[in-house]
Length: 170
Figure 1 (cartoon, rainbow, N blue to C red):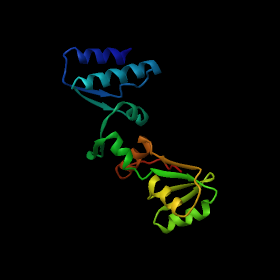
Figure 2: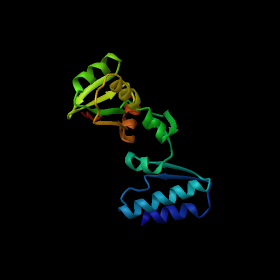
Figure 3: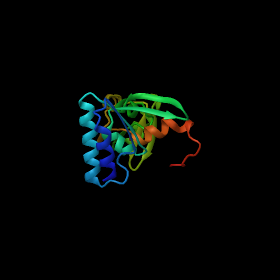
Figure 4: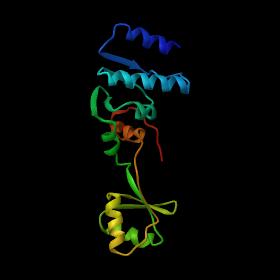
């Protein structure tokens, strides 16, 4: 309730700019949805809404544009989609009964290929390039899908040189 009351008090003056620090902390799912919807509706009115948060999954659902600051420096100022698209954690997953042959062809074309759970995870080539290569060589494809990085993965990549302490993640 204190989150809602604080937000109500901040809105009394009808401000054109609103700064919220961790607005969903401690809220239940209904409260989180309410805050997210309210902030989006305020932005749709033309207001500028700044939200400081450590919850990247929530920011992925709420924010259209992100400003990432690390150690007092501006690291990124772009749309959420752009930040995720720039991540090296994006890849193409492909499954084929001829995965060894396809993997070798992809490697020859300059892509990085990693076998994982019966599939090939490919970076350095998009779905169209992988599909076209397979078609040129008569290789059947059973799955071909883009795998987008999470905002959290993109954020961790962006800020890896701006943190004092890091979690080692596989």
